[in-house]
Structures are given as structure tokens and as C-alpha cells.
Image 1 (spheres, rainbow, N blue to C red):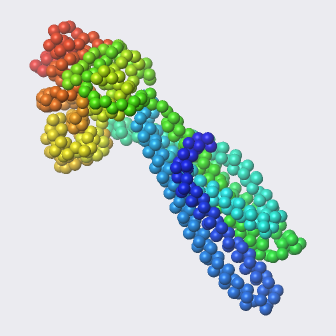
Image 2: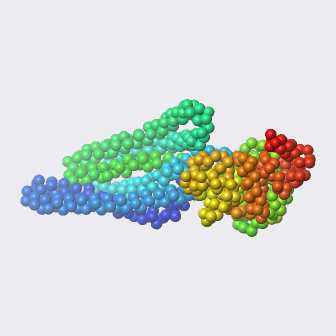
Image 3: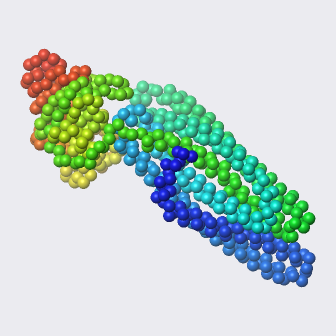
Length: 584
């Protein structure tokens, strides 16, 4: 149960709902317990009438009165039970809402290293299936536990007042029941944990298949993936059935023990009535009703125990993520106005998962409003450099400063909000084109959106669509071509009007003619912005104020375009190669 202690803060938050639910439960149980007393009274009246015919009329009146009282008490008990559910179950929905938001907010602050180690399907399963299991604990499990405890206490008090001896016989099976519940609960916890872990595996596989469906179809791998899913589904079914088999033992077990209690009441009550220990036959009927009133609470103990065990297994998985500390932390609340002067001073970085040294003592200075171009072979560290600047990762050695301030001392969200990023791996949301561009600036007008689209040379393509800016994109922008996605992503960054503009090989899927138009439009836009461009095309970087060449994480050359084409090295060779290709 220690994993579920994490939820105590939510019980404290909604303490008034919780306490009100307990009060309503007590009232509902009191009204429900009127019925056995009234039926006992009615049977005793019938017994008196059978011995004395003169009391027949008064007994009839008593029976009618008791029937009306039973109906009234039942209606009131049902009404308060409804209020109990409205109070406690609604509380569980509020806790579910809060917990999902807490998990989502934590997902947002976790760093890239975390997302490299964990699969999307597993993340989704923990915020959906696992939270749903926890909600069943906070709602139904807690509600029925309170209901069971209160009913047991009240019923036992009533029974003891009527006949202490018969009460003792009635509750004899309960210790045995408690032992069996404990043993079953332990087994359920084990099987529930295994099932939830495997469910994450199935979810991750499905998510990857749906995301990569075009590749799967292109390589005709449908049958292989279908076979893999069939194997996973069979194993999932096996684990689910194993869990259900253990859970299914509760129902028959409860029914058997309640049946034994009824037999004990009838047998021992009958003997006590014959011996004269019990004066009225109605007492036996009253006890039978009490025992049957305990049927659902006792039966629910098994179900509740199962819910608690499943919730504990799920909360343990949730806590694993909630207790994960991000490697990149927001260490400051300072939000200085950033001008955009960037300095790298002997910056080194090694990826922890692959142990690759991506940057090795990289140093350069870039004044505000200037443009830096970064070129180099694949894997030379170009994208890593931008990732360090945006603090997707923190440097291992060296210092990165903006306007002379170490970036760790700048509020993380303010830092990133000052930047406009067009990533190498373009991501668009399953929304309209307009909303995808507006993502960078939610208050932007339609005119500003269209202007940024024109600057990115995508406006004409958008207006040619049937629904124009209201065109709904598929998952990850699948509706658009690669070049169109890159230009929409650029329009999104330009609309933000950032202080620092980062372009990570964002024109690789665009033809050279369109590229020239975009670069021409970018020149006046980037005059007052500090711009970093990563590219494999010399045409994209030749107008930069400073060009650096990266090889194996080190800067091998730096200078202007004219300076670098004179020297031997990667940049000159790239320039000559692309020049000859252009002539061809």
C-alpha cells in the first residue's frame, strides 16, 4: 500500500467531499437497517395473531404500517446511496483529472534522454490505463470500503443488541474469509503487475505500427507485423486470463461463506428458539436479513481488494516516472531581455546512451543580429550544437552564454520562448494548417499567419488546397510533402518573431529555386535576429556572417564563404562538388 500513499495529497485536497461522502454513507446505512427490524416486528405480530385471533385487526394495521415504513426507508436509503456515489465517485474523477495533468506536466519537463529510453506507447499507457486503475481505487474501492466498514459496524451493533450468542455464531466464518482474501490479494498483485507491464509493450508496438504504416506497406511487411501482433495478443490474453482466473475465485468464495452463515443462523437460531433463548421467531428472520445485508459488502471485499492491488501496481508504474528527475532543470526565475549575443567556450558533450563524443571543446562568438552557418558531415555534431543552445541537453564541459549570461542562469522557458526553431525532423500536429502555424504565436492574426507563410514560400501551395488554411493535416502532417512540411514549420518559427532563429537543415527537402526565394525573403527578416543555420548546401549558408566547419565534434575551419572556398578542406570540396552538380 505504500505506493498508494502518494494519493493522500488528493484526499486532503478533496477532504470536504470525502467527509461528506462518509456522512451520507452513514445515513444511508441507518435507513437501510430499518427494514430487518420492521420485518422482524411484522413476523412477531403474525406469530401473536396466530395465537390470539382477537389481535388480528391490530396486526393487519401494524403490517400495513410496517410495509409503508419499509418502502419509505428503502427509498430514502436509495436516495442517500445515490448521493454517496455522486460525492465519492465524482471525487475520484476529479482526482483522475488532477493526476493526469500532473503526469502530463511532468512529461513536459523531462529531458530528451528520458524520451530516448522510454517508448511512446508505454508513456501513453501509464497516463491512460494506469491512471484509470488508480481512479477505481480512489472511487469505487474507497467508496465500497467505507460502505462495508460502516455497514459492518452498524449491523454488528444491531445484531449484538438482539442476541450476542447468535451474533457470535454468525461471524464465525469471517476470520477464515479474511485469510483467504489476503492470500488471493497477494496473487492478484503479482499477476496485475505483469499484465500492466505487458499491456504497455502491446501499446508501444501498436503505436509504432500505426506511426510507421507507410514504411510497413512500402516493404510489404503486413503479414510479419500481423504475426508479431498475434503473438503479443496471445501472450496478453494468457496473462489477462490468468489474472481473471484468480479474481473469479472471489465470487464463489463469498457466496459459499455467506451461505454457511445463513445455515448457521437457521440451525443455531432454531435451536435457541426451541430452547427459549430467543423469544420470537422474527429474530431468526431478522438475523437472516442482516447476514444477507452483509452479502454484498463481504463479496465486495474481494473485488475491492483486487482493485487496490491493481491500483498499487499501476501507481508504482506511475511513481517510477513521477520520481524521475529531469537531467535538464530550470534553475532560475530570471527572465532578462535577451539581445542574442551567443558565446560557446570550450563546450564538450557526450551522449550518455551511446557514449559518442558529439562536441569536443567547441568555441565561437556570435554577435547579436549576425548569422552563423554550421556545415559538416553527417554525425559531426551540428544538430547537437543547436540542442545544447536550447538546453535540450546540458553541456558536460565548458560554458554557453547569451548576452554574457550562462544559459543555466536564464529561466528555461524564457530561454526557449526567445527562440524560433525549425528542426531537422519536422513535426506537424493533426490539426489545420492555420493552427499549426499559429502554434508559435497563439494571438497571431490571420494576416500575420499569411505573411509568415509567404515568407516561407508556402502561401501559394496552401491557397491551392480546397480548404486552404483550414486544411486538416494527418498525423505528423502526412497530408503534405516533405518540402511543404518544412516550409510550414518555418512559417511557424517566423510567426513567433524570436530573438534567436535556429534553422536545422530545414530546406533539405526544398528545390533550389524555392530555396533561393526563401533565403531572399529571410535576409531582411533576420537582420535584427541572431540566426544559426545548419545545412549541407553551400547555397544556404554562403551569405552568413560566419561559417564554421565541424568534423568529429571539432571546429576545423571557420570564416566567411569567400575565405573558406580558398582554403582546402570539407567546405571547399563541398562547394566545388555542388558547383559542378549545378552546372550538370
